[in-house]
Image 1 (cartoon, rainbow, N blue to C red):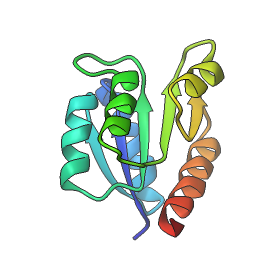
Image 2: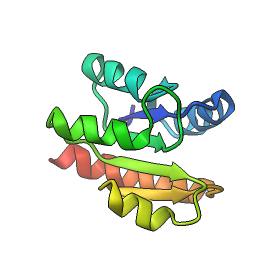
Image 3: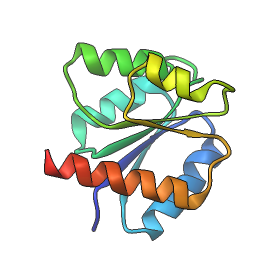
Length: 122
């Protein structure tokens, strides 16, 4: 079994689709509807990579990344957003990488594989 991936997105269909793809690729997958749920899961479960949506209720992507930093939790976070300026947004919130929606499956799997390997070697 490969590394574990946490998908944080308020859209259930996005979480289900990404979960299926990543599980078929051999990853363990956990899901959260918002940043608050994601932080709880990180406290309970080992996570190698976080796939993070920016626009969510309760605790959004920016707040989630800020809370990780406040708690001194170092995880590779991949920003997933359809925002026009995804690269600038990713830099502003200091994430490991970004995927602009819509993204391809090779982009998704390549990014997760690269970051999970980097996470495992640290």
